[in-house]
Length: 187
View 1 (spheres, rainbow, N blue to C red):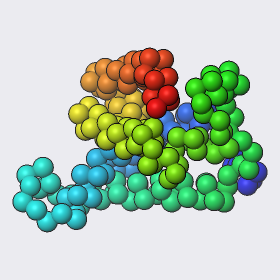
View 2 (spheres, rainbow, N blue to C red):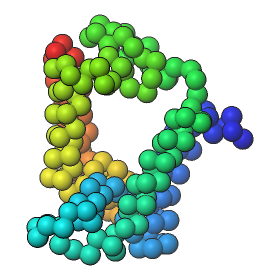
View 3 (cartoon, rainbow, N blue to C red):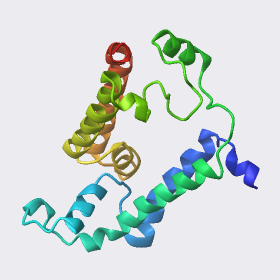
């Protein structure tokens, strides 16, 4: 059983399991899937300021914080106890393209050539981790949710704004991958 859990699951197993979270949350507690509002709940709980954005009953949404804690705990268990010691399966063509762009280390989940503490103090690391993280957070707030909230929860509940947001996420991803990323990798 442990060996089965350690292996990557095919899309036709993992996808439906992720999709089943939506009706499970709706049926069990009338809750919506998504974690991008967790930072707001944490700020509302921890910052006793008189800021109108944080003045709401965050305790009603505390289940979301446990959900995020479960994701972090699951990630820790998966990384340290259930990870496959082999390399991450990446298409050889992608590896060739990335090697041409200067990315050489494919030993972990993220390329250490970009995402490591040593790279944080370089221009490339600063752009990818700090600027990129800020833009993801800003975009999530601006779009009213993240990719999982819109693509998994929003589309499955037939929300037109979520369909538009997901289309924009995909277009933005393609544009960034083909037109912006090659320049960023040269930093």
